[in-house]
Image (cartoon, rainbow, N blue to C red; front, side):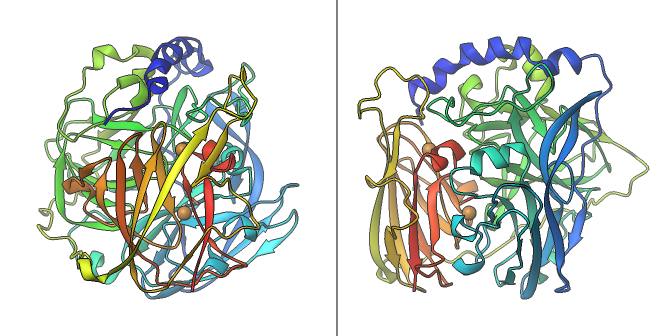
Amino acid sequence: MAFALSRRQFLAGVSAMGTTSLSSRVWSAAPRPALPIPPLMDGTKGDPVDLEIRSGTWSFMPGIHTPTLGISQDYLAPTIRTRRKSELNLHYRNTLDEGVSIHGHGLHVPGEVDGGPQLEISPGGVWQPKLMIAQPAATCWYHSHTHGKSGEQTYRGLAGMILIDDDDTDAMDLPKRYGIDDLPVIIQDRTFDTEGRLVYSLMEAEEDGWYGNTVVINGAIAPVAKVPPGKVRLRILNGANARFYFVAFADGRRFQKIASDGGLLPSPVPLTSMEMSPGERCEIIVDLLDGNNADLLMLFEDVIDDEGDGTSQIDLSRYPSNLLAESRLSLRVDHSLSAETAPLPDTLATITRPREDEIVRTREFSLTMDHSGGHAGHSGHAMMDMAINGASMDMSVINERVQRGVWERWSIRSDQGAHPFHAHGCSFLIEQAEGEAASADQQGWKDVVVLDDDDWSSIVVRFDHEATDRFPYMYHCHILEHEDRGMMGQFTVT
Ligand code: C2O
Ligand code: CU
Ligand code: CU
């Protein structure tokens, strides 16, 4: 796939920024931080999970206190554990002085509890959605979806993971001890000013969205995790606002991808690298039975200029060395921890695609970034018109009406640049990604599909829950600056 020129040209800019980033000055002398593991909140019993949306202070770098946002903690949010066939009760309280919507990304729940922009919690307000979880085991997440402010609020910290378990995964030999051999890995990039404050501006974002110059993993720079000498499961979320990541181990070792956005793949897929777009999740298993430590690298895909077709070996010498040192999660084998060593199951899930005669209709979506409109000379994208099928997000307009319980084919394309397209309320199956048949590791349930200029991506999708005119679902680009600038539409399911 080919990305727009602007993404490649950014290489020069990033390398320069890397040498002057606050983190590379402050951090290089300090000991490596431990990987922060967000506390696990058990939502499986139906008891209310209390979630306080608040401001805080977080040390991304030793001795530097950065003002942040978080949910029941200073930065990011607890990991919520739920279960198929159970009711998840969330009790949000917004203590900020601005409105906040929090969306459960990847959850198959009705529009009225989906947490889209219509469901804004006012300052001091509460929101208590009850979610019936009916879908298979998956790694989902929750994040700010406030109208026009998703990018800024997510950047400052309003994001966390939701883990869905089910009987099938319980019965499988998979690492499942949270924080020991089953680790949440939330990748983000942030830029800090000289005082250590987060720098963000929707107005000044480039056309490709807001790129931070420093990789943070669960809120830490180049953290270290102690892991047992066996199989380790990493639940990786690209929680960045705009960046695409190239993920691979520094020693080029092979790993097994076992799950995509919406749950387990049909069978494990061996890879040595992968690309992750904003909003995507991948669960991988790495085997540390050999007792060697392993460093997982999260590289800016626009800098490495390689999208990770699953087999490529990267030329690390081309990557700015200070950035390379910072862009990693180090797994250090601790022989005192008991290890999961059972072989991975050959079969993980059965995924049934619809027959052609079950697909009742086709819709087309075209994502556009329009430079025209009399704003010539503006360097950022603030004045660009971002739209889907010619329409920018308007809370008073329902753009599509979908029938519940039937299969549809959605064909999506971009007129310029790469965009991760996401739809609420469903998982879908990719037929074609950027003009090519979906690769083995893209053959599972997804809720984000990447499209690039001149190529169509197509998906088959079915919505099983209701979304009304009052509480519709959203489809949008998951580059949050594109979403906030209007590359989003609303649809009902009835
Ligand atoms: Cu992850 Cu509509 O978003
Ligand atoms: Cu979503
Ligand atoms: Cu986009």
